[in-house]
Image 1: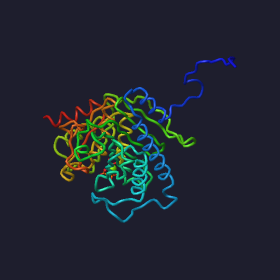
Image 2: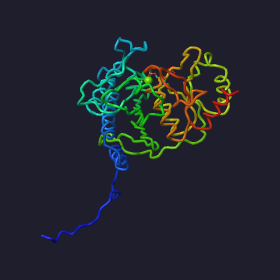
Image 3: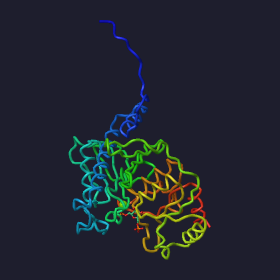
Image 4: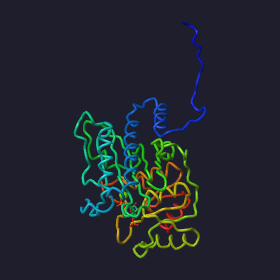
Length: 336
Ligand code: AHM
Ligand code: MG
C-alpha cells in the first residue's frame, strides 16, 4: 500500500469525439443553478430523433409510406410516418419525466401529462415530422422543437403556452436527409451534430454556426406569387435579379441550407393564406430562435417573429428568416 502513483488527466487526447450528450452535460456543468432536468429532456428528444431517423430510412420497405386516411385538426392529410413520429416523441417526452405539457402539430389539444410523478417543468412544442409533402419521394424532412419552462409545474396553464418566443429556453431541429443532423441551441449560440450510424451517436460537426450577414440564395414558394402582397412581390422581383433560387418545400431543409450558406427563406402571409402557413409555436418560434442565435434575423415583414404572441396553440404567421442584411432588405419594402 502507498505506492500508487497518480497522474492528472484531461479530455482531448487521441481519438476524442464530442457527442451531443457530452456537449449538453458540459452546458449543465457551466450553469451552477442547473438541475440536469433539461439534459434529460434533451436526451429524450435525441432518442426520438434517432428512432424517427431509422424509421424514415426504412419507410419504403416496411409499409410506412402513404396516408393514414385521416386528417389532422388543421384539415391536412396525415401520413403514416407523421403518426408514428408523433407517438415516438410523445412517449419519449413523457418517459423523461421532465415535461408537463406537449404541443404537437398532430394533436388538436395541448397534452398535459397526467401522472404527477412524470410531470416536470418544461413545455415542449414540436412538429414531429415537418415537410410532409416530401415524405413519400424521399426528400429531406425533419423534426422541429421548442422548449419553454412553466412557472408552476403543479398548475401548468394556458398562459405558460401562449407566450412570445422570447420565453423559449431552447430550440432545435433534426434533419433526416442525405445525412441526419441535429441543430440545437440552449440560448448561447447554435451547434450542429451529425448522427454517426455506426455508433448511434450525434457527433459535433458544426460548432458555433454563424450566418453570413448576406447570402446569395432566396427561398420562397413562387407558385404563390400571384397571392403575395405588393411589398413581397417587389422584394421577390428584385432579389431574383441577383440571387439564386432554392426551395425544397421542407422548412427544416430550407432553414438548414440558410443556416449554413446564408440567404433568406420565407413563407409569407398572402391572399390565400391570410395568416401564413407555418405554425408559430412549433415552426416559426424554434426556427426564429435558432436563426437569431446564429446572428441572423426573423421577421413577419413588419414585426420581429419572436415577439409574436399566439392566441391559439396552432396559430400561424407569415415569416422571413435568414442573413441579417437580407432580412432587413425585405423589411425595407414593408416600410416604404
Ligand atoms: P407540414 O408541417 O404539413 O409539413 O407543412 C409545413 C411545410 C414546411 O416544411 C414548408 O416550408 C412548407 O410546408 C411548404 O409548403 P408549400 O408546399 O406550400 O410550399
Ligand atoms: Mg410542419
